[in-house]
Length: 287
Ligand SMILES: [Zn+2]
Image (tube, rainbow, N blue to C red; front, side, top):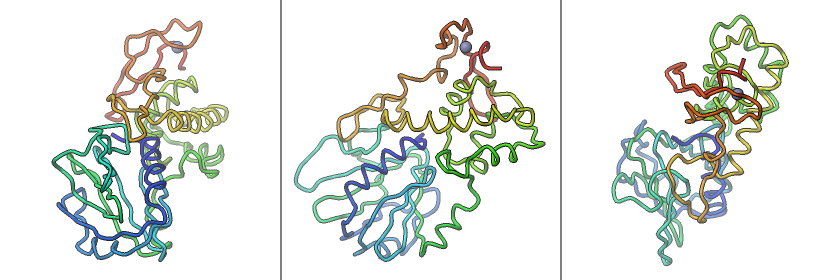
């Protein structure tokens, strides 16, 4: 499943390719995604000029010159492919997961530009598109979500106030999008390892210095993952020929039974299900 760093990498590549470009035509081949693609989708996009591609959490935001927007969410298995009209490239996928080249099936949407098109593929259909008419509605759309780890609002007052009198574990909060947006399951384990905090610890007993560590390490882990090209569990190359490398640097994720990477720690990495998700941690240095 694409997490924030993977979505950010798709954003960067997509932005480079489609900014200042005008949509010529849109073909909707299959409307069935998590939410049905709106009936006016093709008409809405046609002849619109794209000024940039932004991102909030795991949502891609295509911004048009007339101040309207189109949200794109990749769900569990959505990928974006760039297909050039003249130059045939075997690698079309802008992300590191799933097929590197355009699959035959499950191509839901084609957005056609002058010399190329982008194709949205989604075999599991948990992704979606949404049209947003103005800036105000865009802001409201994300109202219910907590700040991103990079946001100034994600600070020690926010975090310690949020945790007051709460009984749930720190792991469950890190993947709770109402608290903070965009930290997925993989990265939550890594953040808690770096912070030396046991994932099952109740947030009400966390100290201020623990909150500060969590804030700092949330930024650190996500920025590192973006810089290393996102974490792909599978081993594919993206359009520029690079591989997502972050998975080689996991300290705890999917390292059950292996020695802790922290020097001088003799701990063994444990796996436990917390909030229905696999959680990895060191039984010795994470208190
Ligand atoms: Zn350890």
